[in-house]
Length: 481
Length: 93
Image (cartoon, rainbow over all chains, first blue to last red):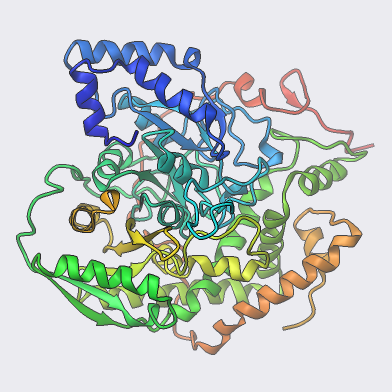
């Protein structure tokens, strides 16, 4: 069952299904799923009050924007009274006493959480293989090797797999270097990373604070807009939360474009890509050119530096953010004779390989003697990357790129970290610049696996970005393929 | 790039790498640092570091008391507690 939020709301309003029946339907499916996309599922008893209240609002004719909609929540959002682990051993016993800003807004709008989605440990990964709770399986199969289990992408891999297989209507993810867009692409769904500063980071387990951003993984662009309406709000508890005026992102999303739109395609992004990937861009071009859209080749000067910049800055921020896990105040404690032994043992045994590696990179680039050469240097290059995007946005309204350089790959296939990091080559530059990006499914590879394209917009122009993505979605008609 | 002193780095990160894994992480770090070294090609002498892409959107709230967490809330996840304190091994003689 893959219905849009507005379609489900119609069914609830017309009494074709009750909120409780809807919840049951998704929960039964989620419980029987073999994808490992949930770290925790919430039985109906946990949500019975919310279910009843939601049903009452439908009966009174005043449902809230997301009333009764079963959502998955990446296990990186603190949820009050519900275990929140960041898919790490060190937080495997942690139950927050507060609700993250974003999930509170979703609850305020009537949605009901069905469970916590698996993800890479502390959101560090591009394949969901670093989770303490095991890898997530992509619901899609390579038609030529159907016995292989494939990765869903990461880090919001559980969110993407769950939405793709229909065990929740939509899921909340987070994106630091591509963690919403890349898994959305590999699972054939929509993933939106809003402008940095749009959705509060308060209550999200921190990875890299200058990059982390919450956003939805959904079956359609319209669903992404509806969820963005709920979560895109200013918050004083996040000092980087922007106080710009928000719009209604779903209203008019399918309106005809009334002015000429210019889209830039970065030729440097397409240099070594496969025919499969190239044809996604060609198809999108063909589909949009009839709608008052013109295309222009653009070229970045900084693309080759983006991944290096990211893999200095993100680990540096992570090593600092993850210093709080010490076995004293919360999380798993490993015994030791002295206080220092407790710190060392808790951290060493509590973090997995990839998280350990990134903490070490971060500690190195921030250490005396290397700070200027690596960390400060990367911050300077980050400005050049931001300026590079601004130069291109002086001339175009959007930038169109592939979302990923490849289709979903086999679990266990990519072992060395650098080739894994290269998975985010098209999403990382946008993250460094803080710009909004959306991935929509655009077609199938020759192996029958979903591929995605990414539209990048200018700062806080999510409304326009969602409109162009909705148009491309309609024209490419992925779900009917 | 100088050699990576993995013992020093792991000490800074408060990690006690098992002996047999030290080489694995040292090599991994070496590869990654070599990979990111391409940034040295760019002249950034005139460029200011960018700390935060939304540096222009600062807002100040009114200073009001907001009681959101109780002592019990804060201590509820502590691995060990004693009364209203986190409990740790003795640190002073």
